[in-house]
Length: 341
Image (cartoon, rainbow, N blue to C red):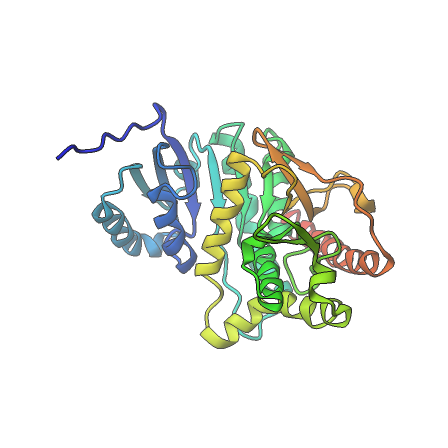
């Protein structure tokens, strides 16, 4: 019997995951270690950051990672020290944050979490690679990403993103179910703005791709503007709260999958003719205030994220985009009051 020879790229990449003892990380670490994100030939070293009381739990996570015997996993470093965790990191996945509980408003999270991301920003600035790709997941994700970038001045702001892929996947799934398609057939849905209940899932430029490659506009395929401008938007906006109400815990499996999707696209690029959505620092595109971390449609090539330009914005969309911008301005101002106090 011939045994296949696995050839790995010479240099392992270092991936830091914060909140590594939590439920999102439990699903995420498996995918990262298995090669689902960076490919089967790219070895990885995982650094697992969490608070000191969770270190015993992390021992068990490390044992399980060892016991999986992954061919792509070259090392695991559990720690409660951010400067150890972010040392020479190629990718930093900032998952850890105080979780949102049933009935808790996002603003309640702000004071608790914003200081965490200030300290992590400082550590990233101090010890991570200057090319590090940072993805903020912990809520409020957009504003936490902005705070993190603010306190990492030596890292280009273009390398700080926040997760709206979960919202995008939710939106694509809702459309697919409505038209009897698979989620992967639904392309170019956009998430504008904040990862919150003000986000705007926009299908104005989205298409459903048939088995023969033909494209049908989502609005034509669904043929129900009242649904797309009402119930559809509300369902996506409040999906996280609906999961919490049902599970008594926030989204974990779907969040981990979305993180993998986001990082994979950032690493390998978006397919020709398609775009995705990410929270990025605004350059003023589409009239959105410069400097906000706002979710835009983006393309990625060679690791560089570019906001898609020239999309038509109707009056309904403009109103939605401005509403979510207003919330982000309010969050930003509140956050910087806290960190500068």
